[in-house]
Amino acid sequence: MTETKLAPGDAAPEFTLPTADGGTVSLDDYRGKRVILYFYPGAMTAGCTKQACDFRDNLGQLTAEGFVVLGVSKDKTDKLVKFAERDALTFPLLSDPDLDVHKAYGAYGTKKLYGKEVVGVIRSTFVIDADGKIERALYNVKATGHVAGLKKKLGLA
Image (cartoon, rainbow, N blue to C red; front, top):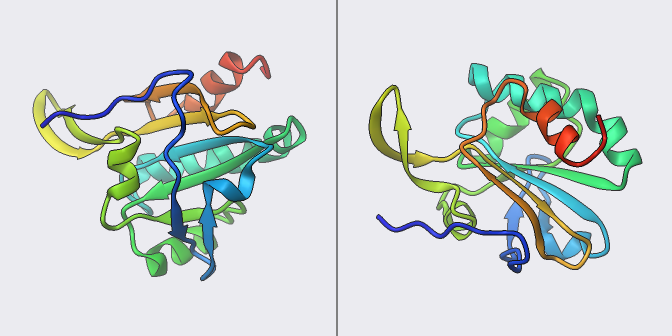
């Protein structure tokens, strides 16, 4: 399976996805703002909960610095609603059950899991600049400590 990998300077693939709150979000909605778009394997799982709560706990600083945070998973919206309510997640959670947006960003494909190669969601984060270009493309990130590392890379820590 050949995967697309995005790099700084690439145009961020456009998308429109349903949100946990019943609306839709398009990347174009945030033109003029910097977007942190992160892909995670599954709502309500331990690692994904830790990562989402890290983004939640740092949202005030990220927002103050001009960033919008969007989380994307293959989960259906009803599961995202439960995830957002359970963990008081106040940023948009987007549903991509067909994995089209995952694939466009290279966040789905072959990865190592416990030493074996498997095909699945690749935990990834993208920083998209105000003009819709990839500023940073981070693949195979760890759930724990990722937000702190990202803030360092962005000069916010």
